[in-house]
Length: 89
Image 1 (cartoon, rainbow, N blue to C red):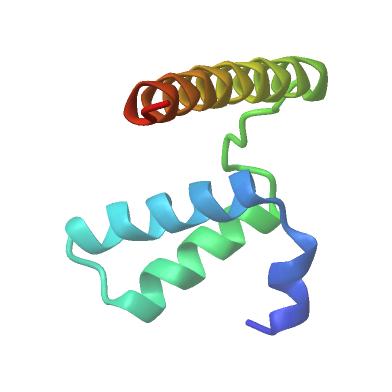
Image 2: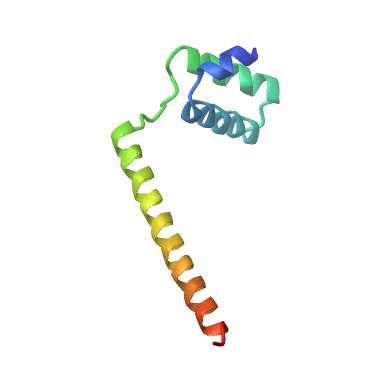
């Protein structure tokens, strides 16, 4: 397997291929044979690769960013409150 081929696959495709190889190894196949079987299945379209809805993944990413921003706001408010109580005038 060349490095170029791996770069052309998506993260999800690589994950499915890896899981399938692991499955064949657990069934008792040697590593090279498990890889050969899995890559033949991938090439022939026999592996089920789930599709990722980009719109949905973008919305999830935006939601996580908002959550992180909210947590940072709470952290900064707590830090300001702590610092203001620590000062004596």
